[in-house]
Image (cartoon, rainbow over all chains, first blue to last red):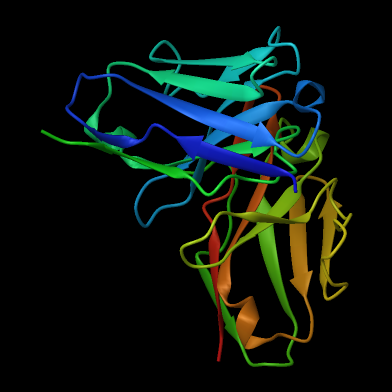
Length: 117
Length: 110
């Protein structure tokens, strides 16, 4: 079964850091690009970042550029999102999603990040 | 404020047809493929339409997509109560070098 599973979410104080992971299984991971998308409570989808198959092409939304860093390890079938200088408005469910932008999917089930003092 | 504009909500009766619009600009919808997603409460988004009008396997032909100029439309026929969900359009914006989504449309089937 093609699957993406996010992890690493939790409660963090404003200004803090968190590293999210997206573990892939059921397909040839190195052949697919990956995106991160988030959804604040009760709000719509917000695209955050894209990484190409080899990691050589990376894009970020203006809202996270300079604070978030996307990376991938094809040997471990995983993508990470390093989040620094977190703010209250970064509170959201964070999803990883496979293949292209906008992503064709599948999407993971999400991991919740709460930024609060 | 989303780059792509969708109606916040729509409602229709079971069995009816509904269309959801998505308006953008020449840098996004006007020059790139559009996808549509369905998000049921408490779940991750699911792809309904990609490349403007193509359905992934397993998506019934009650769902259709089209694009004209800088706008796209999702059509749903034979509405069912199970179609109650939030629907999002998405595409790439070449000027922003970023992915963009619409604000979402909450569909009520009553």
